[in-house]
Image (cartoon, rainbow, N blue to C red; front, top):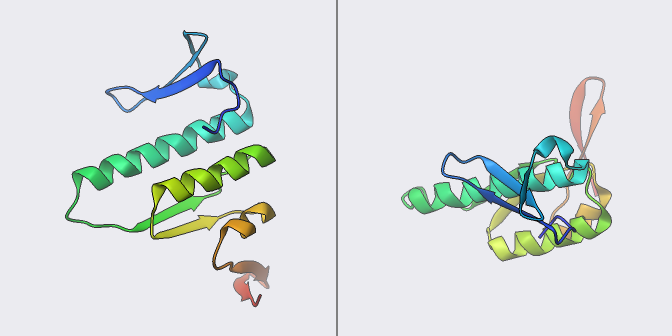
Length: 124
């Protein structure tokens, strides 16, 4: 969903390695753009998260933490990410990001600044 190229598709093989194809030809991730690499990495992490949740039903985890998941994304990809996160239906999602556009997706925003080598939460 995040890659805006209909000629590309991605999947994970049996060894949990991401595979990218363009026009039915295997493609190395080195040849992807920055946003496409980030998209593949995010999809990979979300896929593994779903697998772990399915295997370990006893954990009953309802928390997803994403650190800079949108590095290199276009504005269109940012909005698609919102749709993906809504589809995941995860009760608690923490996103660490410098992207100001993501503020519109959040119920609560905590802005953190460095002051004299100390991280301080800035009141909103």
